[in-house]
Image (cartoon, rainbow over all chains, first blue to last red; front, side, top):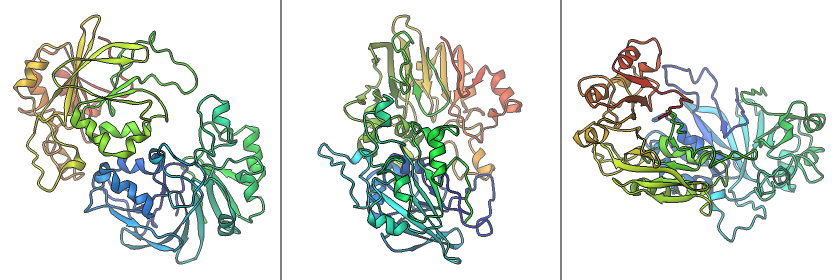
Length: 255
Length: 255
């Protein structure tokens, strides 16, 4: 079972048979895969219970964030493994009792460095340097897979090829419209400036996925300014009419 | 009005007249005073809204944690001031429109360095080096004041002198009994090892405060293993009979 919630990070649960819950402080989290170094992706690690043992998987540039910030030492080094995930190559994930039965392939998507790494000369042009990644998660036994892309600035040709004809894609749904935070008077940045494609418009995610053949499409990582969150909004109707689902806390998806 | 919640940090609100709430993203937080560098004291800073302008006050050794962890750069430097608070000397706190009307005096209490700074040769003997501090908060106009001490390993003579005859003290209520986490099988550490005095026993906080003349005593920073959290427990009755209140989320205290 994969529990894909719209919150901070993908939590990959091994099957219950491999990972019984026990005692009053056990946790089903056996591994955390980081898709970026921004606070919304990494700060949750600081809130896990002391000496809860698991593995953190992240590409080199993202793992560097943990290494550069001593506060992540609360994840006891003798207990929490930090594992570099290669790009463009599937990697098996460990479970509490050996192999988890899952493999993850990380790939760079157009994005940017974390907010706190933006220097004075920061260039907001989307880059594919590996600061922002997408994941393809595969169940080894069946070959069933899905994609998880919580942050993405542009759906370019490379990403289109990768996602085409997938059974399931969770995708960046930060804003409905690029300038909605400015128009609402709640922020000075466009979605583009923040490294996020918008849902609507001719260069938006809904249009980009229209002919990709993805069977199930789920928007997640949705900003609270996005009207698609309102179940009775015209924007929600438009997204759903285009074949999208809107993720919600506690959502469970079976492949 | 001072809103003292049992959670991560003391949030000091200026009077509503000085700090009107406005717009859909305003926040009443004008300043945050850090009493230690542990995750429970500082991680909340990472969850504040981007470009929310306020001041972080902390003694030098605690502020060093922010400076050593670049992730705290999410608090935009042109917007969030980092102010060193001296020890043993009252310091006025800024409000959104000049002086807040509050002053804070920080003082070292027996404690330890943050968990992630404990090296292999860590000595758990309580130290007063300034890694763990208590606060005396004073309303300048009236001279009314209270103490806020969320972490404290021992109530020694210096601290007794400081707290004696206070109108109000919020105090470390982590554990009821030093070895309760071990006995419950949910942890390997005593309270003493974690830098926390327990509530009960001859060397506990209840006994230490018995003859201090503190008018109002509130336990906060209460671990979820502490039976005092249960409103019908014998331990709750014992604490209340000794004149203590148990803090709860949203608690408001008027001086």
